[in-house]
Length: 140
Image (cartoon, rainbow, N blue to C red; front, top):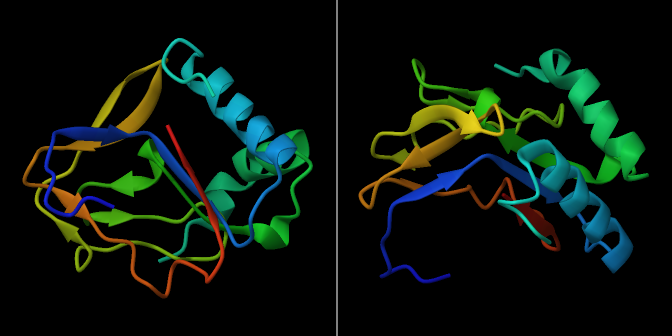
C-alpha cells in the first residue's frame, strides 16, 4: 500500500479468502486469531496434511466454506532452511524465495506461537496468481 515506506515488521499468520466476507465472518476470524495469539496483542512441495486439523478448526469454528479459503500462512508454516512460506489451506500456493527479498526469521514468543519477522530491508510479495480478483486479507 505504501511502497516507499519501510519499517521492521513481524507477522504470525496471513489468511486470504477468495471472496469478500461479511462482518460476522470477519469478526469470527478476528476472534479466532485473537484467542490464538492472546487478545492483548490483537483486538479486532505442499504441506496440506500437516495442517489439516488446524484448518478444520478454523473452518468449523467460523462456519467458513473450505472452498473460500484461498491461502493461509503462519509462523509455523515458514521453512527457513528453504526460504519457503508454505500454504496451509491445502491449495499449495506457497511463497518461495523468488518472492521473498532479504532474510526472514521465525520467533516463538507470541502467546507461545511462532511468527515470521524481518527488517526494513526484508519484503514479501504475494504473486498476483496467489491473490484472486476479490479477496479478504486478514493478519495478526
